[in-house]
Image (cartoon, rainbow, N blue to C red):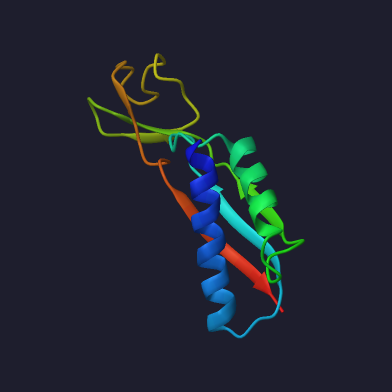
Length: 114
């Protein structure tokens, strides 16, 4: 389960930020998980909730996860758009060859600390 190691890496990053800013407590962590990242969001959340309890600074912190809409790029005309499925045609040129566009990352958006 790679979600556990991803959650551990996030907590390490958050702890480093807390130390850098001399914060005693992390209240909220917001991340964006792309639809093509291969991350099982529920497993990632579970890993964070369990592992965050091991550190005083992150214990009790809230993890907010944003999941953006999937985006595709038309191979024929280059148009980038949201919300279609691989089998659907491009809304501009009506061709059917689409490729996944972005959305394969995990981004730390914000950390609320005190």
